[in-house]
Length: 77
Image (tube, rainbow, N blue to C red; front, side):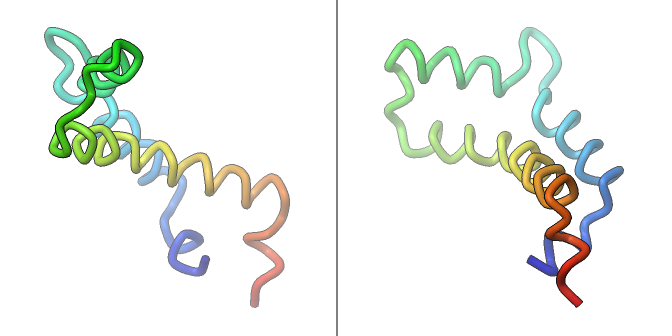
């Protein structure tokens, strides 16, 4: 978890915004992939990898927020 703690919050937020929403036109890529998932059209391995790639910064940010709120990032020395 030390690697997660080394990533600054600012970097995680910027990566989440830009990678999660890129490309911005015609619609955010992650939104397109989530719609495909709900519709059952997310069947290609490349599409699944692409969705996880665009979601990764958001998952890192959520993990950092959770560790910060629970104090886990302070307890390790």
